[in-house]
Image (cartoon, rainbow, N blue to C red; front, top):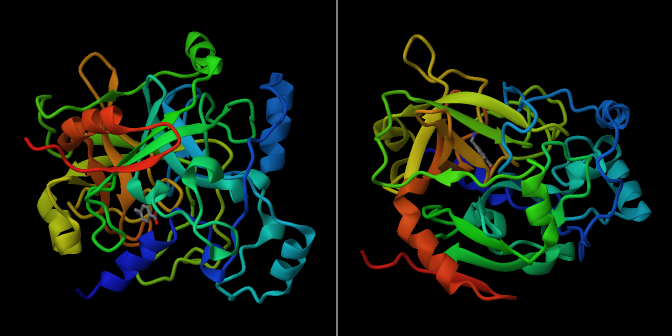
Length: 365
Ligand code: 4AZ
C-alpha cells in the first residue's frame, strides 16, 4: 500500500475544483449564454485570447470534428470580486490558491469529460457526478450544479450547453475503492441535439462490447480531453501546480494523445486492489518496453473517451478516464473497461428517472 495516499489524493479532487477542499465552490451554476459559433476570424481571436497553447499531457490539438462525441461536464464560475481579491492574497504555495487571476472562465467552469452515446445519453466517470461539492463545501446537486457541453472541441464556444435530466451511477463505485468508476447522464430533451447531429457537430460513439475482437498487443488507443497539461509526479499533492512549479492550465482546444493498451499485469503491479476486471490499463510505451513519461491523461480528462480504431476506420469507446498516480509520471493510468459494462449500461438506461440521481447495481449475469 506504499502508494495509497497518492492514489487517493489523485482522485479526491478530480470532480471538484482545487478550491473545494478549502470550502469554496461556485454556487448554483446556470446555463451559460454567449456568442454563437462565429466566423473564422472570431474563432482565431478567441483562441488567441484563451492562451491555451497546450496538450492533455504531452499531446496535441485534436483535429476539428475528430471527436464529435466528446462531452464536457462543467459548472459555471461564480467567483465574486471578493473571491478574486481573497485568492490574490494567498501565497503561491497555499493549496487553497486557485490562481483566479491567471485562468479563463472556461477553465474555472471545467470539471470533467464524457462521451455522447446517442439518445440524450452521455457516459462519464462515477467520480465526476457522485457527491459533487457545492459552494461553501456543502453537498452539491449534480442535476442543477452541472451542465454538459456538446458539439464543439473548443471551450470558448458557448452555444452547446445542455441541462441534465437524470444521472445513474454504478452502485459498486466508492471514493475509497474507485472500482466501477462509470456513470450515465441523460440530458433534457433539446432540439439542438438533432440540429447538432445534422450539422455534423455531434455524433455518438460506438461502445466496445465483450464480443468484439480482443485488443491487439499494445494496440494504439487515443485519449482526448481538456484536462491539465503539466506533468505531476506520483507524490506531488494535487494542487494547482505542475511538477515544474507552473500553474496547471486547461486548454481551450481539445487535446489528444496516443497511448498503448497495456497488459493488466502492469497496472496490477502498480495499483493492486484498485485494479480489477472492470478496469483497463493504458500508457505510452517506449521502445525499451517501459512506460514513457510525459504522455498521459490528467485531472480534468476524467470521464472522457479512450477510443480505438476498428477495421474500416470507425472509432469505438473502450475506456473512460478514471485515474492514476500523477500525470505523465511514467506510470500507467487506469481507465474503466467499457466492454465489461454493456449490461450495466442497458440497466442504467432502464432505471434512470427524470430529476433523480440513482445508483444502479451490476445486473445479475
Ligand atoms: C485525475 O485526477 C486523474 N494520469 C486523471 C487521470 C490520471 C491521473 C489523475 C492519469 O482525474
